[in-house]
Image 1 (cartoon, rainbow, N blue to C red):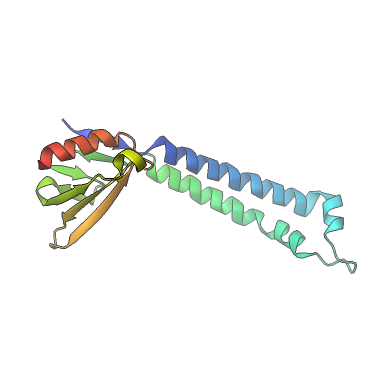
Image 2: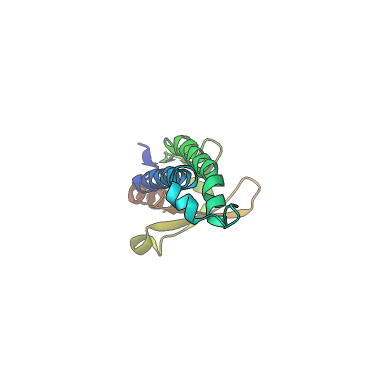
Length: 153
């Protein structure tokens, strides 16, 4: 039976917080740069030219909105990402699969404290590769680690 570890709620929630932050800053900057007459008057030079704060608040909103759009795209791209421990291999993605025979060691020294472990394996070219898995990125990692240890022991 395969064990799955989906993308963590921690990562999804952090992305949502970043999106809300970017949208909020974009709205705040746009308001202060274009609609808040008192703030605009305070941040103009005597000759009427804008000070750097005003220039920033007029130019920044599209960049923050763009960042929010990119973060939404990234959230949708990773929303269904997961690690699957199957009978013969560990599936990290459609392209990256690690057979249990190629795993050389699992360093779980920091798993209880920090929630991460490192898998060292030989790839198809024979090169030694290390891959770190963290519970901040994936939920259900203890079950994945348990299955990995059972398979390579």
